[in-house]
Image 1 (tube, rainbow, N blue to C red):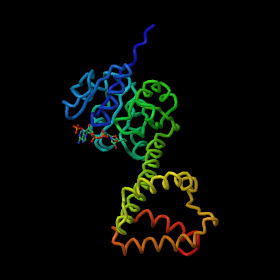
Image 2: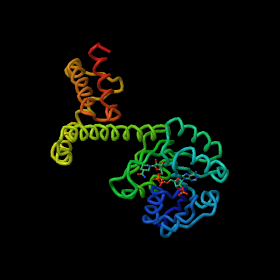
Image 3: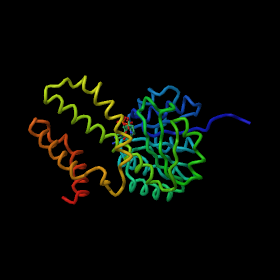
Image 4: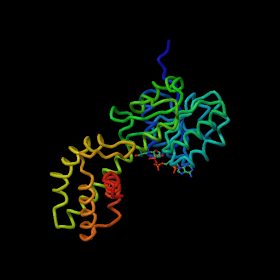
Length: 273
Ligand code: FVH
């Protein structure tokens, strides 16, 4: 019996691809890597450098792709897809649900299995307990490679539909960008009235946002339904005041997009849309 870990190939050695390859090597997986700028392989100690994409794919049962975007990934993988027959391709490039389903169709047509993933971590966290990665695709395929994927971060299988992973990935990013937009506007407002933005952030904004996150996220629903207990008519007036005052204070108007989302929801709920 051998404890040897299965080899893995990684296509794409940007910041994330290098982190993925490094984590696989640390976990004991012989790792073959290909990147357009070939010298980046030298930054991943222990990786075997493949000179072509075909050579990388042929080196392992499992190939992980992590490139800038789906169109780059397609241009790189498609011409070499013949080498995928009987293998598994895991695409961790950020994409969309419809793009993932298109990928699956193309990869399966080449006799391979396909999983689509969404990485919820910065490169520095890859391989640690705080990193988690969503996967969508056939459960049997996921289980086949699950223990290898664990080397990258906690794997979360969402279901057979490959579109689930990019959908969940984008949803979490949306939550993050929503928070960022709110924080950015809040700090700009405080600066516009001559306040100390850094003390405000530290002492008031962070604790306030932390306490409001469960409430705001808990109240969200797919229909955009606002309960009467929110007093949406009052909230619509308050949001209008906030938008007007922000404008008068000279806060950049492009920072207020998130307020319009809430204003529209409140107006519709109050019947004044
Ligand atoms: N880094 C992060 O924090 C996030 C975390 C969440 C998931 N994302 C997604 O991961 C994908 C890769 O991101 P990255 O951070 O590795 O990105 P870069 O460091 O910019 O590396 C890009 C790689 O793509 C290659 N590439 C770009 N254009 C081309 C092209 N025309 N032909 C061939 N390869 C191309 C690039 O190659 P090179 O410039 O080194 O030669 C890198 O390998 C991404 O989907 C994030 O959304 C990361």
